[in-house]
Image (cartoon, rainbow over all chains, first blue to last red; front, top):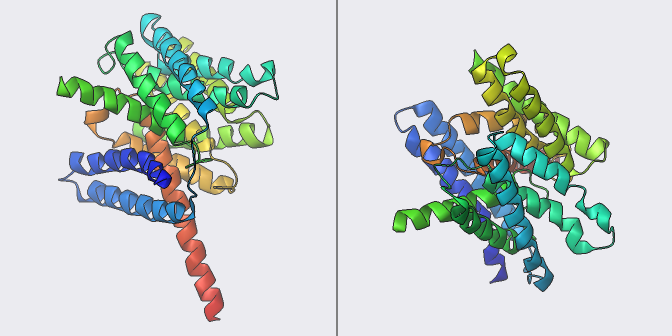
Length: 180
Length: 136
């Protein structure tokens, strides 16, 4: 049952890839590319899922959610309010966050904080027409934080994992808007 | 013209981050964030020299490529595969759906898809190569 959390990231990957296919239905080359990407992803997921182990979330990991929220808020502020853009915002927040483990090298939570902060920063990279204010940023980063904790043991070492998590949080917020 | 440059920006972002993170021992987050910050600031202040469009797109494709470069060596150890994944990322992002325009994490998702596909292809290739070896 705990391995079901493995599916969190593949859901968002396949949503992204299938949307590429949907966008380019009339272009066989791009439709083919989307098909190859989806197939390649599914093969990799099958391999990874069969090797994944069941796990229990550590209670202390939930304390990383405020780090995700902080990363999102500060990046959003630099990106939208100050107008420096998403990349400078995320770059600055991520760089500063990367030095946090130096506060105490033996603290496991501080060791993970830069990842959580950088994940939040990707939420904060959203355009203002997607996340319309800080309430939206809070919902998206909170959702991303929860996905971050639940997906802790899976896809470790895969570049883009944090971005996928952030994308998931933003999608959930967009879905809430759509529903309301 | 811009569209031909961007995949190479993605590739450069991937490889430079991979080297700074692992060979330079700066860690994944600092490597990606610091390099992206440098590129972002350079393009922000050099807008007039490089043109509005390039100044906007280069940092985006670089940071996306840098997410590919955050891949651990136990997943993909070859810098050539990292470079190819960075190249692939650019195409995935370039052709991504308009539904997700402005969505934070879109770059990372494109990067992760590229890495997952590269990983899957490597695993598949290793399996085929091993079967051929056993057959001999």
